[in-house]
Length: 127
Image 1 (cartoon, rainbow, N blue to C red):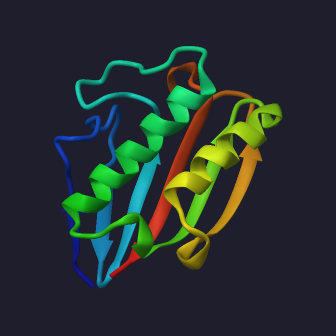
Image 2: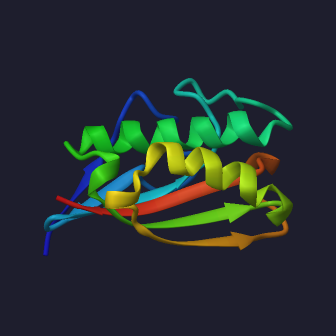
């Protein structure tokens, strides 16, 4: 099955050999987004709230480039540097994903993330 590379100039360009997202059939796989703005600058250094908002803005931008929205997301993976920030991240995440269309999800604490950020989120969308 052929696949299509998805790119949004409203989200940071990949910082390695990967794509922002890939469409295979009607499924879009969005790479993990970290809190960089579209120019590649870190947003909210040390501020998990600001970083979470930026990550979700990046996911929204990449999905839009694939003509999809957060309501099309069926699965998210959240990686956090400190699970002690779960309540803050979860509250912000909940403002972007309504209960009626909330995707499946896992949240995992990891020892380190790219650029030493506090949160990274990837997702799978269908549409």
